[in-house]
Length: 142
Image (tube, rainbow, N blue to C red; front, top):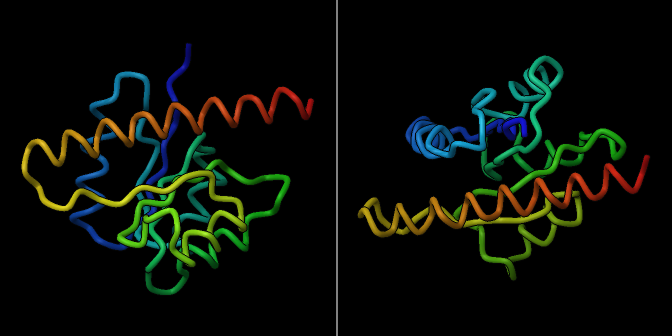
């Protein structure tokens, strides 16, 4: 089985590095690239062709919602929102889901080992779940 290609889009350098480290720790995932905003990611997607995007919502130049709006419906890449707005019942997460995001997750509340481990486990689960959903959609639309 091939690895799940992940693209990270987040303007916070420390959060990008944190997510990169976690993604690299998953044996079934491959970090394809890491971008600091939506503009940067648009070009990267054409070259790297990731399987899943981990997307922040608040970024300069092009925020996460604008990025999702720009994605053509027939070329959408399964997206997981990683944001402090990550509560499922928030309006901005609802907007992101309506624009095609498949799931969301809040960053850990602290960098304590148990919080990081819990976040990492949840993220891995959501990546696998999103990958499976994506494969189901691809298989049924062929």
